[in-house]
Length: 123
Length: 113
Image (cartoon, rainbow over all chains, first blue to last red; front, side, top):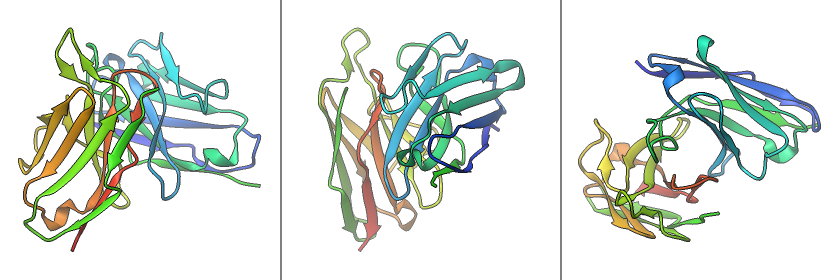
């Protein structure tokens, strides 16, 4: 069964850094692109970043570009989100997500979500 | 950026009634080369992550009850729940995956009257 488990969240002060991890199981991790999506408390979903199956291509939301970095360690089935210069508005549940395929469109379509990991940015 | 606008923000229907959620994109998400609309619908129940219901505007994911259906093309899309059940109480989101930044609608909260 396909599964995604996030970790690394917690409380951090503004301006500091945090790295989220997501361990995948039950599917061929190296075959699929992966994404991060976040949800501020009581709010809707906000896309954060996507990385291609081979790690060569990344795209970011304007709100995090230059501060966050998405990366992957395929031999260890792990996705990362390095978050630097954190702001209070980055407070959210961060979801790791798998895309459905590799052909056009499917490489951006999310078909599996992790349970989420809460990040609180507060002084 | 493609802006996704959902309506209504919330709706309360009786059990067995038909629920309709609308989603409009600020530009077409129809690929003329494949004739596919790059629209997904997700269901999020309280305290849970979102779950994919429908992709390509109208393709129901395996295991999703057939009371859920998606329709539309170009810029206007609809999610319909043909006969509302208690377990359908959730927030529903549309999303375009046509181009980055990938964008979601604001969500529609569905409740039982």
